[in-house]
Image (cartoon, rainbow, N blue to C red):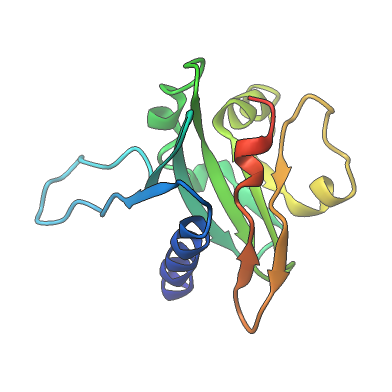
Length: 157
């Protein structure tokens, strides 16, 4: 499924490139034997007045376990900074749903004992009202979704 994840990242980038006045840069995974070195996220996106630290994840399952968010600690360092949005974009590909979970929400959920983000709970609005999770408007194409990620910029931050 690694291939699907990489292709999702390509689609994510191309969808962001459609948003006017947006700069998006892919941070490539460090290679060459540099153990213990990792990037803060997959992409850094800029659209005045926001900078977004975006991690992309895919899952076939109904849930995305926080244990798969290895960038959590690094992303957490970006909380509370005006104009900074940090979090994880999750494509639940068997459910045809894409969500943005801000890192602050991940932190809150983990502190509350949640082990994962559950797609069904989001859709059925069964999470606490203070859990801020944004559904990304998306239209299913053959495999991937055409998504309007600009909704993240319009949300109250």
